[in-house]
Amino acid sequence: MNKREGEGWSRRNVEAAQERDVHANPSSAVIAAFKVFQQELDSRHDKYERLVKISRDITIESKRAIFLLHRVTNVPNAEGVLNEAEGKLDGVRQKIGQIAEELRGEDIYQFHRAFTPGIQEYVEAVSFLHYIRHRSLISLEEINARLVFMNTENSDPKGSAEAPPSGARVLTFQVTPADYLLGVADLTGELMRLCIGSVGNGDIDTPFQLSQFLRQIHDGFSYIGNTGPYEVSKKLHTLRQSLGKVEDACYTLRVRGSEIPKHMLADVFCSRTTHMDTEEGVV
Image (cartoon, rainbow, N blue to C red; front, side, top):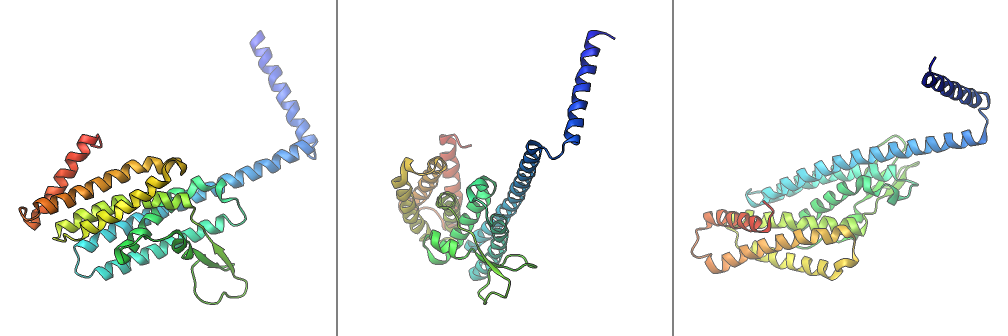
C-alpha cells in the first residue's frame, strides 16, 4: 500500500468514525439545531420555487389579456373584448390569491423577487384595460382593492362579495409601490402600440389623447428621478422612446395627415418607428 492509498484509507476511517458518533449521539444539541435549520431552509426554498411558478403563470395569462386588448382597435364590439379580458384578469387574480396564501405569516420582501415579474405584468394588464375603458390611470389603491380573497379550508382563494362562511379567513395581497411604478412604465409601450393600431384604423384622435397621457406619465417619472427604485430609472429610457414615437405620430398626422390616405398611415408610422429604433440602436 502506497502513501496516497494509506491517506485515503485513513480519511475514510475518520469519516466513518464521525458518522458513528453522530448516530450514537442523535440528541446532540448542535446536530438537532442544524436539522431544524435544514428543514427551515428546505421549506423556504420550496415556497420560493412555488412562488416562481405562480408568477410565471400570472405573466403568461396577463400577456394574453394584453394581446386580447389590442383587438379593440379593429373589432366592432369592443365591449365584448373588454369583458373577455376582464374574465382573464379574474383568473389572474385567483393566482395572486395563491401567492397571498403562500405569504401568509411570512415577510413579503424575503420572497419578493420570486413573484415581482408576474405582479408587474398584472399591473400592466389591468392598467391597460382601465385606460381603454376610462382614459385614465388606475391608482395603486384601486388595484389593491381588487386583491382581497376569501379562503376556506377546502377551497382555493377567490374574491367574493358575499358574507364569509364560518371557518373562512380573509387574505389580502398588497402590490408594492415599486411594482406599481414598474408596471405603469411597461404600460407605456402598450399605449404606443395602441396608438399605431388606432391610426391604422383611421382613428386620428386617439394618438393625441395618448400623447398627452404619456407626457403626464413621463413628467411623473421625471419627478421621481433617481430617488425611486433602480429599476424605475432603467425603464425611464424605454418610456421616453414610447413617448417620442407617439409624438412623432402626432406630428405626422398634424403636418402630413391630409397628404397621406388613412389606410396608409399605419405603414408610414411603422416605417418611421423602425427608422427611429435603428438610429437608437434598438434594432
